[in-house]
Image (cartoon, rainbow, N blue to C red; front, side, top):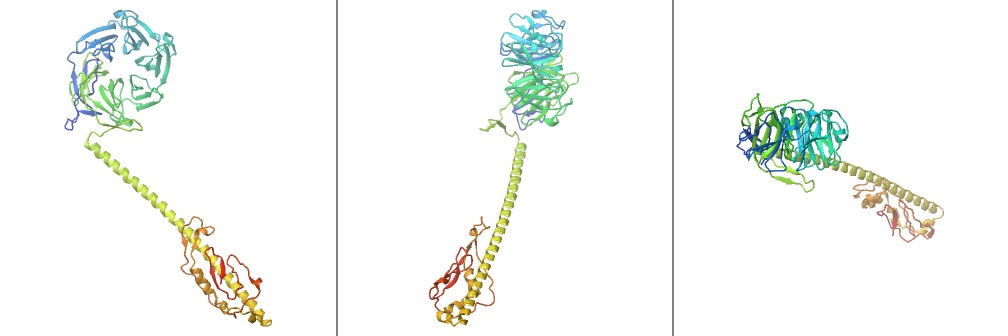
Length: 534
């Protein structure tokens, strides 16, 4: 359940369980269901205004709150109330004990331990130390009544209208309003330094999981203490009232921040007289209650009205205390329903589950659209890749076929030329005394013509990968048709050839002549060389 308690002017905001049939004015945010505003049954006695409130670390159920220039305690159950230090009779500066000590306006404080409290005396421009045992006050940091800016130990440092403080480990972080800075005080050495500068005056400050949440008049930011990374949640330079997405949101002087959960922050905006809820999951801001008109109005979230809320605190498991800039106090009531969370083992981040059917429909539509677009993109990409691959392969095969065809053509022409040469030699021998007739060249030689050579080549498969310039192709080039030339080799008488010196190898398209009695046929082997086989 979501509960916040405020000891300010006494207002309580109520929240109920999330329900699909609940009235539309009920705010349902990250498991919190806010119901409305009501008056506390036993509100604290407020003289001026409740500027800040915090649960007392020394006693459960008891709260410390600042009422103008006085620091008080309040227990809503026992209705016990007391003054720790200060008085509203004459706000000023004076060290002293109990009510003899004087303050200007106590806008914030932090409990250092069980025995001491550091008070932010805003208009006196310093921080004051209070002993809970003796109720004696003393100056802790800065020089009271002397505004300025200076680093240094204790009273050597200077502040200008400090507003709130929060303790982190062994340091105190202070919003130094007019110096536009977050100041840091080392508890051991009392050394004051500047932690970070801002573009606007810092007002409220709160801590959650080593992250500082800080408000300015018109913006909200977060600082990671481990990395010192500064990130704006609402980044606006204009005061205003605008709900919705962070990028368009406007706020007006949030004087108090209440961390409801890791995903939800409640703002008390004095400038807009409203409570605002910051949703860190959906990254938007919304409003609780309408603006008041100098008077408060209790009721549901559709009808309730507030006047300048200043302070927020969890009162119990179902209400939040609201302190205001008046003697009035209220409470905001609520219920909390834990939503399902899924954990990613890689990032250990939690994911918010949709809380309505509309959210599911929107989510499903978005996922389907994303899948369709992604699938279409992949399909187009694969088509282009396949098209380019086929085009490249066709180009490679075509080039390979042309190269092979040229090589075959050259081989055939070389064979014809060689045959003509042999014919000429035989004719010369016949003319010189009929020697050729006696040698008996086989008649079958005359049957070898260009057409038969092409037919042999046509039956041969040639591996493209073996051709120079055709590397990368795994196809086998088949010659479907090779045109034949007209005419044939002239026939010659067939005789035995006695001259063994006539045997020779002719590479790259030539042939080898045998000294055997009969000449065989001419063929191409698969590496495109030509030889005569007996």
